[in-house]
Image 1 (tube, rainbow, N blue to C red):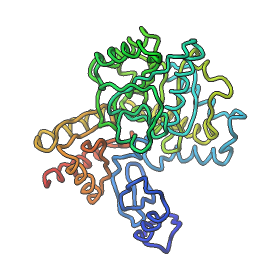
Image 2 (cartoon, helix red, strand yellow; image 1 turned 120 degrees about the horizontal axis):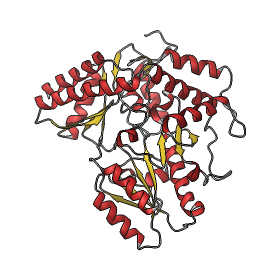
Image 3 (cartoon, rainbow, N blue to C red; image 1 turned 135 degrees about the vertical axis):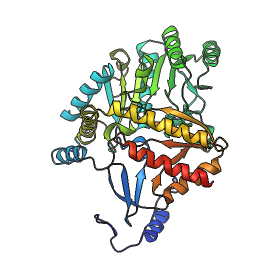
Length: 416
C-alpha cells in the first residue's frame, strides 16, 4: 500500500471497484483502477502502481499534480474564505477578472463551474443581446458545426454536432443549424437560408480546434471567414475554448493564432488546475444583456476556485509555460509524425497545435487496444471520436516524459 491517506485502509482495490459499480450511476466507463495521488506528470493508484499521465484530467491539470504553488494557494484560501455567494464580492474573483481582461482584451467575465456552464452563459448572453439589446427578437437561430462538442446540459447539447450525444434526450432546443467544420460555402448557404425564415441566425458557436470531435484543425482562413461573416450580418461569434484555452496551444487562447477576437470567449478545464471553474468573457456592449436576475451561478466566482485560477495564470507566466507548450508541442507533433511514418497502415494522420495533439489510427478497435495496452505499460491515454489518441499532458511536461509516452505507443503499434 502506498503512503497516502486512504478512506478505505482495510479494503482491496477490487472491493472498491465493486462499491463503485453498486453506488455510482453507470454514466461513465472508467478504467479498473483507483487513483490515489499524483506528483507532476505522474499519478499512482492505491496499490502504488505509477502511471505517466498524458490525459491530464482531460486537459484540466495544467500545472500537473500537487504543484507546490497551487497547493499553497488553495490551502491559504481555504483557511480564509471558501464561499460567500454572489450576494457579496470577494478579492480573488475581482483579481482574476482583472487578469483575464488584461490577457484577452475582453471587458467582462462571468464565472461558473464548468465548460458547459460557460457555454450556457455564452448562448444566453448572445440570444439576449440580439433580442433585447439589439431589438431583434426573432434573431435566435444558432449556427454550429458537425463533430462539435459544447457540453452535456440541454442547451450546450443542442448545439453539439454529434447526434450520438442527442439520443434519448430529444427534443432539444430548437434553432441550431449544423454545417461541416471548415466549409465557408456551407456557412453562407445556412445563413442565407435562415435569413428567409422567421428565425434568422444570430449566433455562431465554434471550437477553434474541435477537440472531442477528433482534434480537427480549421483550414486556413476558416475562422477569419467566420469573423468576417459575423461582422457583415450582425452575428455574435462565440469561440468555445474550454479545452484549447489557458496556454494549451502555446498562446493564452487559440484565437490569438488567427489575428482576430471573437465576441464571446468561453474557457474552463485547465484554468484552475483541477478546481472546477468555467468562464465566459465578452465585451461591454454584449454584457449589457446580463442585467441583474437574468443569469447566475451559486458557486460561480467563489474565492477558492478563482484564487486557484489566479495562481495557475501566474505560474504559467512566471515559468514561461506558453513558450514551453509551443516548443514541447512541436516536439511531440514531430515524434508522432515519425510514428506515423513507421506505421502507415495503422496511423492515418497526426493533428494538433501545442500540447493538444491527436494520433489518428486506422480503426476504433486499434485505438482501444492501444489505450488499454498503454495503461498496462504505465501510460494513461484516451481516445476521442473513436479512432484518435489524444495527448493533452500538463503544461509542465518534460521532453523526456513526452518521449517516454511516444515510445510506449510505438512499441504497442509494433506489436499490433
